[in-house]
Length: 98
Image 1 (tube, rainbow, N blue to C red):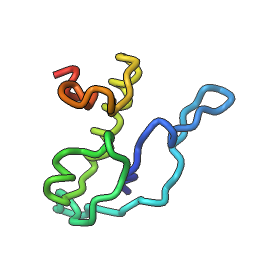
Image 2: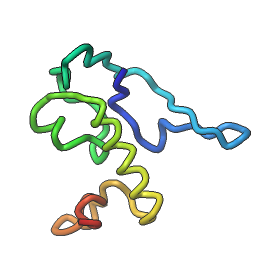
Image 3: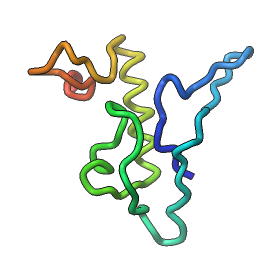
């Protein structure tokens, strides 16, 4: 399955500091067999969406990996995924690190 909405508010921390993913409302199954992606409507949270998914509507497991990477960048940089106060440069945390 592909979650399609990996973001900090959908990661819960348990009593033993185990992380658990929540909110499976946008889950999409696939791809299966030799397929590399699933064609679908774009859904998810801005700032965490895979740019390849946004431009092609081709969803793959890498889309969730990208979202998780954005979360890691937020943790390391202490910056939000999208910073509206920086409209001209470094609007997205990905732009800030590249």
